Length: 207
Image (cartoon, rainbow, N blue to C red):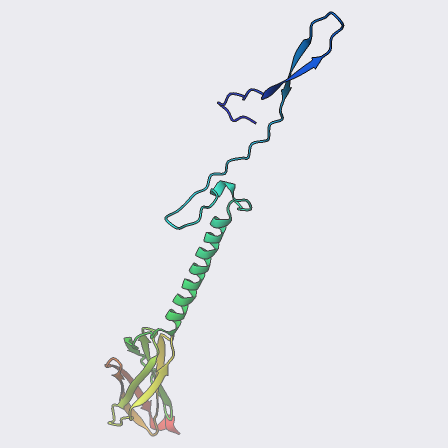
């Protein structure tokens, strides 16, 4: 089979002479007869590529069978997804295990109790607002009559942004008393707040 642009090769012929005895009195006749030889099929030419000295020749990529189109893009996509998943897992672990930072107090407020009557108790409540990091609050109460508690502690877990501190003050006897309760926050951020309320108990009420 000829490639485009090539002229067809002429058939190869050879001449065979045939001799025979003609009739008496006739001259001898010589006949020539062309014989066409069969041509062997051409061996296809395979172009080989070499990459550098000493590297064996390889066939062009187009001649390699079995290469599936789109296989490499799918592999790259799978590799990218796997790397992204691994990175997400690592970031989550770092975020979960990384120290959250110190506990900080944002505000301290105290509620003013109502007037306490005979033989009543005053529940003085203070509210501490924090940044939500774990830690321990250190505080103490001081009453207007000079009584003072020791250092008290309350632990806060991660994400807990508030804590309620209470003082229970019991009153006994008759009379009127202007009470004062002070909460002193010792740490991690020093602060204080004061509550004022009254105790009233007359002789008739006490009976």
